[in-house]
Amino acid sequence: MKDPYVFDFIELKEDAKEKDLEDALINNITKVLLELGKGFAFVGHQYHLEVAGEDYYIDLLFYNIKLKCYVVIELKIGEFKPEYAGQLSFYLTAIDEQVKEVNDNPTIGLLLCRHKNNVVAEYTLRDMNKPMGVSEYRIKDYLPENLQNELPSIEELITIVKKDI
Image (cartoon, rainbow, N blue to C red; front, top):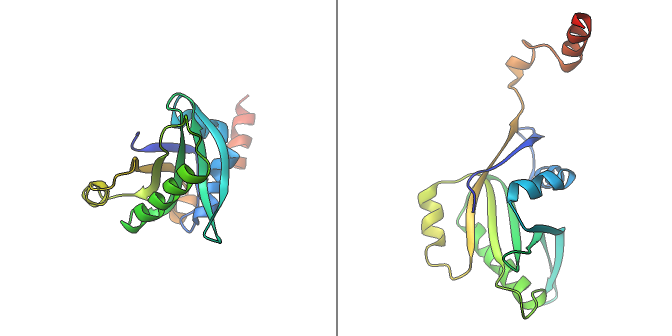
């Protein structure tokens, strides 16, 4: 797995929620597929699963044609926490039991977090028996407010460029 994934084609504010990140990725799905690598096909977002009468929703579900397996991606807006691995493991088992076909390989899981401590991630995943990983993502950050007032707006830049043409 790559680490980090670079989503510099999206912008999120500091107070963004996981849904904001998911929506931005869905709105740029072609670019996301290119960043993920070769062989990825988009299956769905907020992919619904029912387990023991309870509803669960996977953030992003892909199928990798070359690996012949589903890939579950769970998005986390902040720091990686070990309990996220349990949630992802649950989703991998559910996809393997309910969606995967006989000829498919076991489902792979990826936790995409804004930040991770490599030691915590390694300890968390070391004894896991499912194929999963933790990677960071990077996005285009907004400028801090104190700098926003110091720099020209996009409209002002366009006006300046048009004057020079």
